[in-house]
Image (cartoon, rainbow, N blue to C red; front, side, top):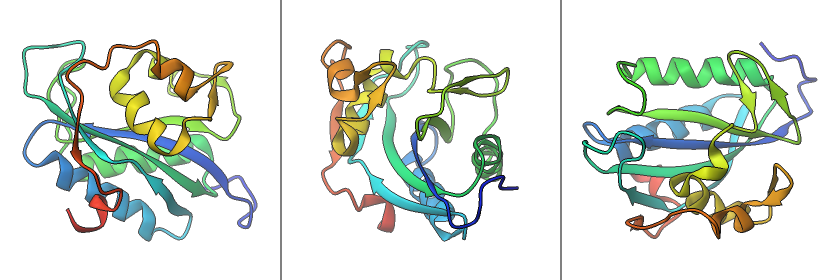
Length: 175
């Protein structure tokens, strides 16, 4: 349920990833599902990246991307939509940083800053993760997060092993 007037959209950014089954297809389907909603419109999508596992390193490489959406959904309502999409795609949360079919993280929501038990915005660890910052920089290098731009944060994180898997920023339309 939206708490915003229907004609007032907020620019949000999402991080998407996965390493089970066909993660690129799952991320593409998630983006197309969001874009098909009346209350969400995909504005930009990064290239698709292949990234080494982070946190729990004894698993397959991940595929990651980021997207910008314009939405009239409130932050928690958007989170619920993203979690519903994950559930529809059989996302099972067994272990932290473990293998998954898909993960959709709400990274930023306009200029909002909030710290609540179920949702912290901006995402509390996004500025530490090359697999988030590198794709986000494809379309939002000048986005300010926690006082610095995405590009500045990117210059300070480990990006070793991260490679572009698909140069096209339209990969999500056909995958």
